[in-house]
Amino acid sequence: MTQLPTAFVADMNTLLGAEESGRLCTALAEESPTSLRLNPQKAATPYDGMVPVPWCEGGYYLPQRPSFTRHPLLHAGCFYVQEAASMFVARAYAAMDFTPHRVLDLCAAPGGKSTLWRSLLPEGALLVANEPMRQRANILAENLTKWGQADVVVTNGYAEDFARLQGFFDVIATDVPCSGEGMFRKDEGAIAEWSPDAAERCALRGWDIVSQAWPALREGGYLVYSTCTFNRTEDEDQVRRICRELGAEAVEIPVPAEWGITGDVTGSGLPVYRFLPHRTRGEGFFLALLRKTAPCPATRTPKKDRRPVRTGAVRDAAAVSKWLRRSSDFKIFAAGDEGLAAVRQSLYEDIVRLSGAVRTLQAGIPLAVRKGAKLIPHHALALSVECAPEAFPRCELPLETALHYLAREAVTLPPETPRGYVIVTFGGHALGFVNNLGPRANNMYPAEWRIRHAAAPENHLKPCNT
Image (spheres, one colour):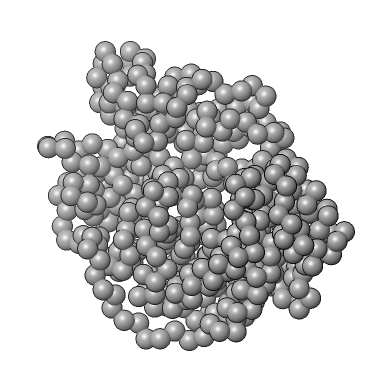
């Protein structure tokens, strides 16, 4: 491991004391634990030897790190590889005194916390997952598509865009860009890029993000503020500033002492939660739950975006609605020039309003794309938990064939497989579509998602097909 910056060590000595700081620095030179979180809507046990993460139902530690990319159930959305400490978002949610209806994950890519939020929220609650960088936003959309739950919108905007939606959200989660001290043992590049000035700049950037989005949070709503860093400038000092200047109060999250989570290290007794790698099994993480006490200004009509969700009658809506398990719950709308998608009826007006304010990449369930007179089913439909089981034939693939499918290579189906669009599965979980022509099957897996090597996974962690 690259030597830790002298200024960082000095800062930790001041913050934690020399003994505690020494233990932290020693832990930063050790191997990171590996953890994942299961999708409760796609029950599967991908590996043997998993040990529960205590603060998050469905979170597990693994005894060692396998080659996740070559496990088909990852691509089926059955689990997400997420750092254990960041799963503490689940405890923040549990501490809220109401069930939120609209949640914004403001800095969401690549999607770990967004998939967790979607699993925590009840059906019919809206999750908006946002990422300002387009390439990262596409990765976010991919991971949420694989997760397969319907009530999600992926946006590609900045914090200031959401300010138009005054008082719209019950919860805003801001895992703000930070100096990355908690990533030192996973990413040596974070060590090379760190400096006291970088921490100060990140604190200012984090403040800008929170303050610009603040009008979109309703009075009494919650801000979940988090970083993957240790210093007080980006952590406690930022939380105090939010409370003082924007109007908020910090909320206590009950946690057992045996979890080893550290509270405020500045001596003020602020209810905040810091994960130090020598005390908890996880990377460096900091979280505070804040309740907004300031009133919201009167709602105003947002300026129209260039590409809002289209309203009005949609051709072929009746045909594609049959592909959904509960078609009466959903409204079909036009997505792009030739696309069709479905959103829950109760959320449609919210999504129209949202898309008028922020660039929307994906809303609800993409269903199909028109190509001439044909309706070609969208890959997202196969992965959605709302896909009707009788809508398409299904064909179970053995492991080797499943890996070839995920590499977007040619696959051979059993001769009795029906012709036309078929959902291929592994362990009973959908991987995507093929167009079975009889002598051959056209692989419809998205080219940009394909894995690079179709070799079988290592045997030290046994993949399970159930």
